[in-house]
Amino acid sequence: MTIHETLAAAAHGGKAVERQSIYVYEAPVRIWHWVNAVLILTLALTGYFIGSPLPSVPGEASANFLMGYIRFIHFAAGQVLAVFLILRVYWAFVGNIHARQIFHVPFWSGRFWKEWLHEVRCYTFLARQPKKYVGHNPLAQFTMFLMVTLPLFFMVITGFALYSEGAGRDSWEYALFGWVFSIWPNSQDTHTVHHLGMWVILVFVMVHIYVAIREDIMSRQSIISSMISGERLFKDRED
Amino acid sequence: MAAAETLYDVIRRQGITRRSFTKFCSLTAASLGFGPGAATAMAEALETKERVPVIWMHGLECTCCSESFIRSAHPLVKDVVLSMISLDYDDTIMAAAGHQAEAILKETKEKYKGKYILAVEGNAPLNEDGMFCIDGGKPFVEKLKWMAEDAMAIIAWGACASWGCVQAAKPNPTQATPIDKVILDKPIIKVPGCPPIAEVMTGVVTFITTFGKLPELDRQGRPKMFYSQRIHDKCYRRAHFDAGQFVEEWDDEGARKGYCLYKMGCKGPTTYNACSTVRWNGGVSFPIQSGHGCIGCSEDGFWDNGSFYDRLTNLHRFGVEANADKVGMTAAGIVGGAIAAHAAVTAFKRVTTKREKADAS
Ligand code: HEM
Ligand code: HEM
Ligand code: SF4
Ligand code: SF4
Image 1: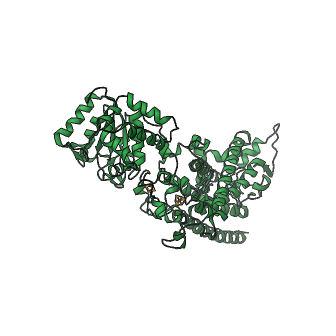
Image 2 (image 1 turned 90 degrees about the vertical axis):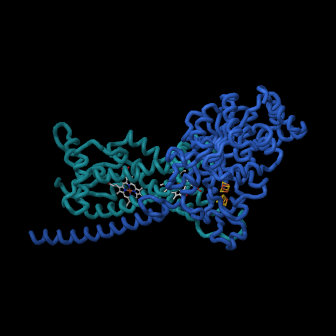
Image 3 (image 1 turned 135 degrees about the vertical axis):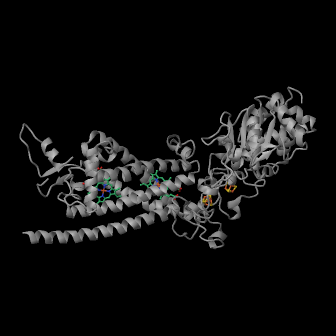
């Protein structure tokens, strides 16, 4: 949605109300974003050390539980992440239109792809003036869907499947997610794809933080503060 | 062979005493994890039910399953199962040979239609119409399909029959194919391992021949009683894993102290088998107890999953060979470089645009 449409949509009784700032990200979206960010970094760190453990600790085995704690933090954070993801999906249904953006890509809309291309051209310095968007721009929406939303579901599904191996064949985790082992009968492969999923998300995070800071400086709208206050502030009035 | 002969009849005819017979029943019932009443139930079944013949065929394989089987912990168990009760045909170890042996197949197929067990060791190579494994003058795959037609159920012995094993490792030139991908219309029980543990094998055969049905199977078609936990779940070195005490190098201090072999590539955390409980050679030891990690021999494609000594699996896609962390860090490095370059161009453009604007006004 571009700024013009929103302004038109905000028209009341034939009189257009022009606003400089719009409430975009509702509180649940913002809370989810920051909780999710902290959880992902925790999961990535602990996950990395599950794959490549720290140097051995000295002493008696019964006096140490390092690997146990690392795994415990990973599993606890993973379960919290899953709960928050479910709540975020719920909010996509009841929240405003921007709460829905990261859960879909309007694949059949020609306009979406045209604007997507425009964003790509802006980022490759081929076009100068980026359009203004109230929510995420098409390129952001596309990337978030592909590199956050889908991978998060993937991590939750494969994560719980791996968890079911320890919890046992009679656990609810196995009942719900055991089908993953029909796709990868050898759970060594499930470990590998779960591990690769981490890198997809981490690469996104790198780009994401760079772009957030860059746009905050360069663009004609507020960015980082929008994810804190929820308000999108437009710095100029041009299209 | 009398038509309604029971297993017990055969046992007695072979000169085995009643005492040994009951001993065999209690031993097997215990190894299958049954309660106290089960031995009696087993004895009764063996005395009254008609004998279930077992046909044991060998496809593309190394005979390690047979080797394991004949070394079962209690000699009585394997003797009873192997030579006296039900093994009507096993071309590797039977006395009969040639046409005489092949005649048994035909006889069993006709006489016990829908009642015999087909135990298959090895698998069928399908390339070149199956000519990579000729058995009795015919491709093995034909013999397999022919005998499977009238079988009650099929036992797939070992990693070969269950998953494909080394002969199916990439690039699999003979197109060696596990049994469940060749025979689609019969109940199949997978007993993977390279080889499977002897007690597991005798346990499975005894269960099926005694009760005339397959034991409960898991999602992968393996008997739950032996394959529902990982080596890692019952490994005696697990305390060191949880503590974070690992062997870092062969023959280091940790190795001498018997620390966990995770960093040496132990596949225990992803391998379903009974080694850490039943152990090998009559319960003497198992690989981890001997200081070497599990290589995951009972898992699908264990030959194609990188080195036995790497914790992280090497991927062989897109012509590169690297583990998930190497792939991920390379991607992150490239993207990091791209971000830095992008930031530089952005800063440069901003300065030049400002200058243009300043010039214009
Ligand atoms: C693990 C780290 C992070 C992940 C996975 C992540 C993921 C996301 C996702 C999925 C959204 C879309 C939110 C929605 O529509 O519900 C988003 C938006 C946003 N994130 Fe993050 N984020 C992370 C860290 C950060 C950090 C550190 C910053 C600050 C520099 C940041 C700044 C923003 C901003 C400003 C937006 C709104 C973008 C817009 O206005 O179009 N994020 N992030
Ligand atoms: C963004 C989310 C996540 C990231 C980045 C992540 C990362 C990782 C990594 C790198 C590993 C090591 C894989 C290996 O090489 O063996 C791992 C293992 C694991 N993860 Fe996650 N994970 C995430 C979410 C989850 C979730 C939601 C769960 C569910 C509870 C979960 C459960 C597990 C389990 C059970 C293991 C195996 C632990 C073991 O074998 O000891 N993960 N994770
Ligand atoms: S030695 Fe292997 S099976 Fe045993 S605890 Fe360590 S990783 Fe698990
Ligand atoms: S410990 Fe692992 S590799 Fe060794 S026999 Fe058991 S399953 Fe196979």
